[in-house]
Image 1 (cartoon, rainbow, N blue to C red):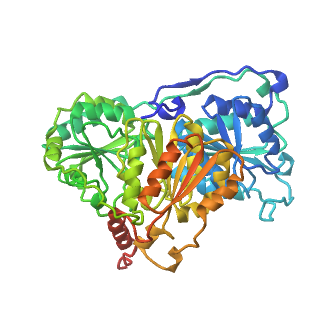
Image 2: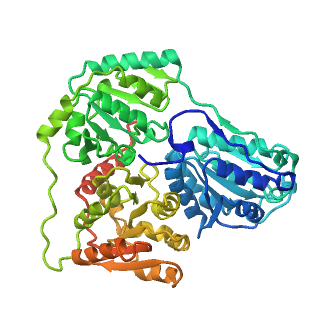
Image 3: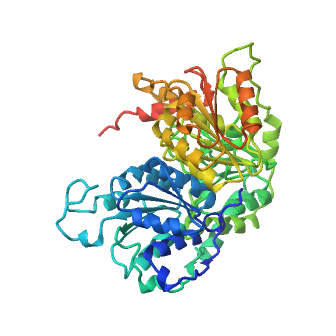
Amino acid sequence: MEAQNNIGATGHPSIVLPAVRGSASSGTLGRHLARRLVQIGVRDVFSVPGDFNLTLLDHLIAEPDLNVIGCCNELNAGYAADGYARFKGVGACVVTFTVGGLSVLNAIAGAYSENLPVICIVGGPNSNDYGTNRILHHTIGLPDFSQELRCFQTVTCHQAVVNHLDDAHEQIDTAISNALKECKPVYISISCNLPAIPHPTFGREPVPFFLAPWVSNKMGLEAAVEATANFLNKAVKPVLVGGPKLRVAKAQKAFMELADACGYPIAIMPSSKGLVPEHHPHFIGTYWGAVSTGFCGEIVESADAYVFVGPIFNDYSSVGYSLLIKKEKSVIVHPNRVNIGNGPSLGWVFMAEFLTALAKKLKKNSTAVENYRRIYIPPGIPLKRNQDEPLRVNILFKHIQDMLSGGTAVISETGDSWFNCQKLRLPENCGYEFQMQYGSIGWSVGATLGYAQAAKEKRVIACIGDGSFQVTAQDISTMIRCGQRSIIFLINNGGYTIEVEIHDGPYNVIKNWNYTGLVDAIHNGEGKCWTAKVRTEDELTEAIATATGEKQDSLCFIEVLVHKDDTSKELLEWGSRVCSANSRPPNPQ
């Protein structure tokens, strides 16, 4: 979809990164790490300084191809690295020991759930303190320094504690290569006294960084393709559904090759929006069970065969486990294996290779596409408004739809924005990101910062609810300092609307803020920032015209005041089904 960094966004070829010339005088661990980050495509590192990482930050800042961006807190630094990795293919953050590490942990867990390679670097204790009985600050008061490491072990694919220079090179390179191969975060702790010490290992020209490609078992691949082709070529009205693991498998191009070859309708799961081009003539929308795009759910669930490529079936994506999908009709393509109906499960078969090979074996079948076109009725338009009528959410998103182009990207916060943004039709090359698997409220502020920093040629349009914004609002400051020009729609409906529709209570009502006043105070006359508060469609139209015209080079923050019960119909349906799933009684013992 987008011109992303080769390390994180293209197929499975071997990756050889160029050697970097060095000298004995610059041969330090700090410089080596900085150069490795540049080599893998990182140009911006999100950080919060602390006494254990200050020397390391000096070396990162000294690298001319690296920009160190100070964030307001570690959580947002982690979210920013997450957003950055979504466009560039890899991101990085630097924090201090324990107090910083445990603060960024939630963001790293989210990146793990979304299969994003984020390099989380922590400035650790002096190497002399390991193995002693000393108690250090920034710890819980015990001489055991492993609490932070143990926390990261469950949310990263590799952990490296660097407290010796002799094996530092190997530890760092192993961690980084694992992040890129596994598409998961890694944890690297570096003792605070090591980054500036010269060492012969780092004085030499580095050996080129090589990542071996994943290659399918040839016989397994052939068997999977043959069995799948036989299964699908017998079907009358098969469909093709793209899932979120298209990204981790780097199989988006192969998916579209298959789509062009087979002629099936193309649907997406909600968490894969943005990974499949929606301008394709066979695209029919989002398959999300009872809250699917109009006519899409009916076509998928009435098919006699469906191919799910890289799906995640959780309680949210299945609308409280209510999908009408039958195993015996399905082909499930995972990143490294294929399940065919009630038949075989064939492993060590990698998605991109499988899809490319399958495309050559399928008979073209457009029956389901023709059925879709027969029953399709275009969506209605919002009712005509009265003069000075309070703004409705569906009117807001009608205007956001008109703002989209190949030069924009949408960031959707957890909440009703999930459902409203899902209905946006993305033009070619328009980016789209949201965090459905982890669903951490507040994610979008840091992610907007990171994505906008990575995709400087795009203008990010972020849709954020007031409750989520209150969690991570501070890094609006960093956006202004970086000169970003995103447009943020702050949807002020007085609370946690998505929680209201799952289970209401007084805890879902929040203290109202003067959001534009807060952003103006953060702006404080430094940098380019413009705010507006809108209550009607006329005010919204005027604000959008200003944001896309006179203030197109500024960060634009538009607070949209809407009624507390103004939600998408999809959220109402989805919330009741998720509530039902959450409230299931215990099984009989």
